[in-house]
Image 1 (tube, rainbow, N blue to C red):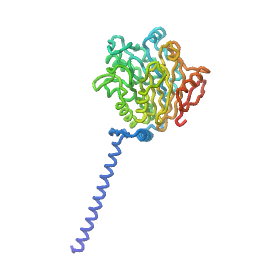
Image 2: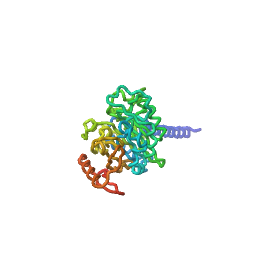
Image 3: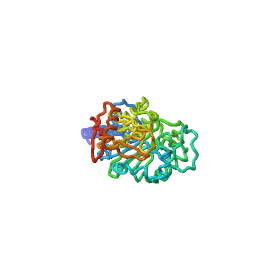
Image 4: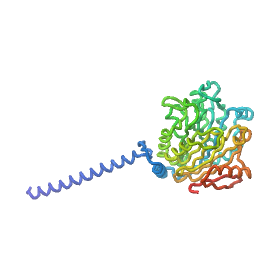
Length: 393
């Protein structure tokens, strides 16, 4: 072989080696980029969430959610206020049966693919000891109340409140089993903190899904779940933000239920607004509150609507404000909340029904005055009077 041929072969080999090294380098760089993207916040693959500014966290996570499977599928969700089968309600249930409370709202509840409420007091047998940490009065409902509630259209039940642990861990454990056996999903309470923070993922079988989380900001501190302790999800800002951000990275729609505020007060506290803002910047599409047992107003924080208190739903009250509540009809599509209908509820002898006519209009107009700066349209469809909120209205 001549020197010329050998030199030509060496140059050809060198060029091939250089090309191979270049391709290998590009492959390594591309792999690094893909790994970085896959482990970034909000992708649903277990990446560590960064602390982002309020605007970036909110908008960025909503963009990611809009691209997720199921984001284009419409999902409807109904939300009701405080429900209990204890106190005076226990006497009504004993006299008229466990389906009595739901006879006036069945048609409305069944119009929504999913419906969730807050349950005050576990559904459990009377054999459990009362929790000594309950400062006021323990609340418990009969186990027989579970099936009629599910048959009425309730799919998910929030237990993150100041009565879920009134009969200790045994009472909570039985309540979780009772709800599960009836076909309902419990939110905001469990055998550990990890379990209490798990969202209820409501799936419709057609690709649509919405994640619902629940936290409690009231009640004895011993009611809060721990690493190895049963209880409710505490509304601690850092805990709440992490759970909401994780859910927003995995599911197209995220709703947060909060037990907060002051009983009997229509005024929104600074603490409620602090927690609402934490939910908004973490990617929640909707924030809804309970606990005051009266209706409070709504506002929009960084694009996220916040309904501070729905008031009562199934509850016996002698006060006029305690017998009035609101029910929300929510519509999700294309990765976000498309609108909310606000229905006025009147509770008579513990049984809720929709207000109608002038009474409904008067109530809704008065309630809208508690929502300054929020665009609410008074509407009437199918004989029902309600307020409609639409993003950007």
